Amino acid sequence: MKKFLDMISEEMQAAFEAAGYGEEQAGAALGRVTVSNRPDLCEYQCNGAMAGAKKFKKAPVMIAGEVAEKLRDSRVFSQVEAVPPGFLNLSLSEEFLGDYVREMSRTDKFGLEMPEKPQMIVIDYGGANVAKPLHVGHLRSAVIGESIKRICRYAGHEVIGDAHLGDWGLQMGLVIVGIQERQPELAYFDDSYEGEYPAEPPFTISELEEIYPASSARSKEDPEYKARAMEATYKLQTGVRGYRALWRHMMNVSVTDLKKVYSSLNVEFDLWKGESDVRDLIPEMVQNMKDGGYAYISEGALVVDVKEETDTKEVPPCMILKSDGAALYNTSDLATILERMRLYHPDQIIYLTDKRQDLYFDQVFRCARKTGLVEPQTRLKWIGFGTVNGSDGKPFKTRQGGLMRLETLIRDTKEEMLRKIREGREMSEEEARAVADIVAVSALLYGDLSNQPSKDYIFDMDRFTSFEGDTGPYILYTIVRIKSILTKYAQQGGSLEGLEILAPTGQAQKQMMMQLAGFNAMMESACEETAPHRVCAFIYDLANAFNHFYHETQILSEKDEAQKKSLIALLILTKDVLEDCIHVLGFEAPEKM
Image 1 (cartoon, rainbow, N blue to C red):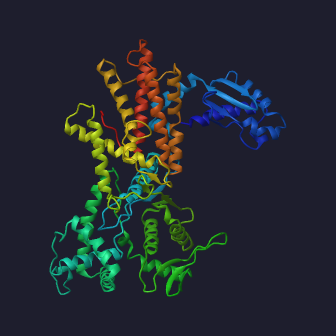
Image 2: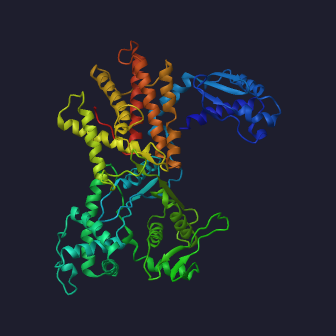
Image 3: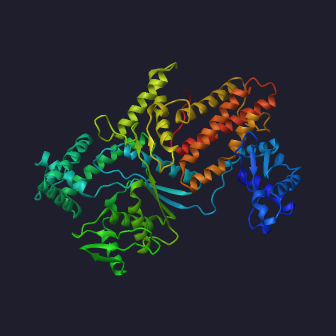
């Protein structure tokens, strides 16, 4: 289906042309229609007469008046008014609106047009480090990335989500020597051992998560200990058998735990690759950079110049290997681009990280392009997100001052939601907890995604878990309210099949239908702009429009049977649109709240 505003704008543009103000004369379409910024005066507006006044050397109000005259018998507009100094105030035809929304209800994905050439998109949105617990700082990359993945898939593209684990750097060596300090007798540290290593890991996830911070802290104070960690890292990376076996245990234990935490937020990755997966590609990539004349030695390190003539600030070279020959994050990220191009031939690769990494990704992307790791048409996109802050406006921390574990934040939100669900609701404890878990996830995800990714936001437990205002629970409460009406209608003997939406009969109904009509334009822009907050804004406005309609309209007690069926059909469409929208945001609605 054509986008609703496009159809209205086409009608307006035809009127401009019929009045003698054609596109070919003005050099630009004058008929663009927008939602009114003065809803007390009109529903939509067009400012084309203002734009065309200079070109046509005529007062804009005169142009507007002539265009309005051409729309006197319009099937799209019920009223067109030219007002000084030259605006066109527009009211929509109820019949036209009813036809459009009815067609939405009959069309797959409510009329969202699928792309002629779907893109292959890889999204890198995990970034967790092995052997470390996820903390609140990992929330944003996970939920924003998951939502972008779902939005792009919904819009018809093929999308691969990659966790891209940190599993190959110095932190691995620090964990290995930390384990060795605790259990020096383990066979993994005996170079002469030739037998099979145990199938079970010699540590639990809790022990593993204790080892890293302790080992990291010690390495900062004890140079000898740090040297041992660097040696352990070298042994791991060069393939020492025992170290590789211990590393596999770390990977298995960590990934199992990571999957559990991510799953509680409805976050799923298609790939659980890490830096280690591209280790064998690095020598080849480095050699190609040397052979191509891109990489050279500077102060002992191998670097690639990435500065450009148009730069207004200094952009340092991209370091490929340190002076001791060791690889860096840059190196593995570049090799990962090479691997992704070979395996998936993506049209686009999207990265989500903290917004403070802008210079880093600028260097990496420039290096990838300069050295030919990507095709010229392949888009490399970085989305830098802001921090989750506490009420003091500083990054969210525990009362003890440390970074809060993500698992703890999820648990606390579920407990607060359970407390609110219990208040005034007759549910068994089991049912209340199940509902609270679902609604808590909506509170967390919507609370994050309703903000533009680049902005910091304050995590406000009270506000995020409220059933009123711009929150996830409010959206779910609206969906559950609609489900309740539909259930009652069915219990009264009404069928939910074969219903047809008619033209709106009241202003509240019309407002809700106009909001619905903007769905496909919204979803298209949310995909193109990788902007989940657009979906949040849409469903908040739709939920408000529905709740106003609900309080203004008799639905189940409507006497006119045809009108009642039309209203029920409209509710079904509203519920379905809301449910598709919350699905792409990463959460679902319970049956009751």
